[in-house]
Image (cartoon, rainbow over all chains, first blue to last red; front, side, top):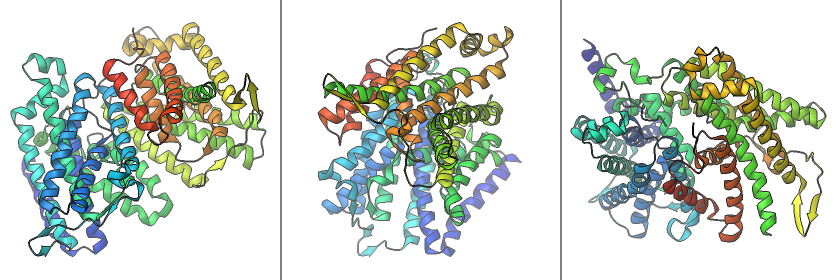
Length: 321
Length: 285
């Protein structure tokens, strides 16, 4: 019974994601595209925090690398969208190694601070390395994707492309976390020492998860750059890193659907509250506090049968310094 | 120049230390990583400013009111938000404090506006000159006050019943309860002291900066890094970590590059943690 009602909820969400955007205004459609991009970021962080138990407060750093790599490839070298996408994902995935190395030695607060520093350093480098990033004025004129003679100029077609990427990543991630690799990650989260004793290669598992997580964030960065067509360092501050973490936890940590729902709620809520003018972030902060007090398992725990399906009982427990 | 940089760096660092001390105290007493700690300092500045400017109170009275109000906020924070989440997942608690951080900084923006305001200097405005080194008296006062506070805190934790209970709770909550320590009261007191430390840091810092609602998060980040580099959970570590960051920040800004100041600073910190994964002065029990 429980699994049936969960499937019903999921099927409804999928139908809504496909059909509702066709009726949206252009402003609402923009928000829908951004929700998709942030869903990718939340999935990427969820893999790291929910399944492997490593908190990152610098995820905007990977987002930044992906965006800048594809912006530079597209504007300076005039490459096609496909090349820019592959380049952004590859470079960002490699940059995941930058955090994988300290993560081998550090955990808990020590790792959290390293990730904060990582995000801040990248933000500052984007401001100061003007010959690469054009500094605070940012990079403009990034072309929309072009396939043959067809340019993807409408927001609706872009939305469906992003939706396709979100679905693909979510499905691949679901397969990954169910596989032996995913079980190794969860063992690592619950007890690193015991996991090592049971034959989990901790070094390899950490490298895997950082590279994959960074790669997904790089994909989100590439989609973002080609969508907004103008990027500057202010889109990649620590506030964004915190926002991504809020999405993961508010949605339900350790749950793939949780990240997608979290991205939707956390991105749409401030937009919906805009009518309150000056109050809206105030209310947003209040809602986050309230959600944590009454719904610590995240919004996904409201859906019956979800905890069984996503196996998130001990998610997030790795943050035990 | 070197001495001058050292002194202003020490002053800034001492403020990071104070915030970090409160941060560590909350961690030790209730395993809470409080992202709103910087907001307590920011609110304290605004409390003092309002009491002094809007209500025309004497500046010292205004400062005393601000620190008391911040301590009370810390107490409310423990009673209202932390205690109900005692058995919750650590990440849930962190997220709650992040929500509080957003709430308080935007609440301050709403009440006091977004324009940065000037806080009157209350410790003799003139700069002192000694052996050709020019120092602002506020910076010297900060260093002095923080040194005295550190000694007072040490005395408090080693000699008084409250300090001993706080240490007992930090070591082992259940055993402390079995020994007859009233955990709830001790934790509340710990939170009030932590918030008061942030409040003191706020009023000490106010004349050195422009008072604005978005000061909290950057202050918290520097203090968090200070606490971690010092060895998370250790009070001397938090103190020295803060001073280290303040001084290093100034040297890098002056001798290396002001554009890359934070880049170099954070890289140095990462390197320190890579070679000393437990921090410089790890807590030992």
